[in-house]
Image (cartoon, rainbow, N blue to C red; front, side):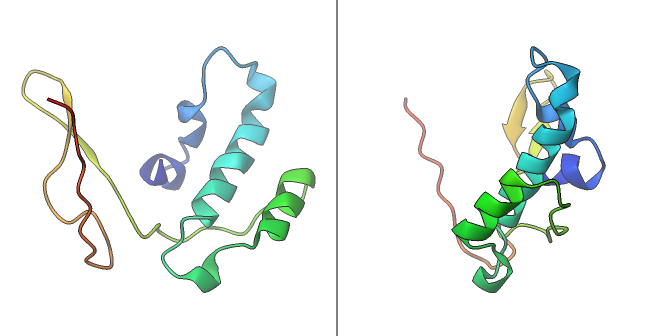
Length: 100
């Protein structure tokens, strides 16, 4: 989501069955969501600020890169898979548990 937002393609994440007139609202929600996952707590909005941003037309602040990034890569067969490497800017390890 971060990469798409940064490249101006965040609305591609929105369900295509929604009317195009909701694109601005969807982008606002994505931006606010990115603000909520900032690396430092001081950069994250309070819940009252989130409610205010959702209920008003004011442009939300520009988010910084989130603390955790999960990038997708594609195998030679074209199937998406989680890429190897560091997934966090603060060296926290994330384990993804999957069923057998």
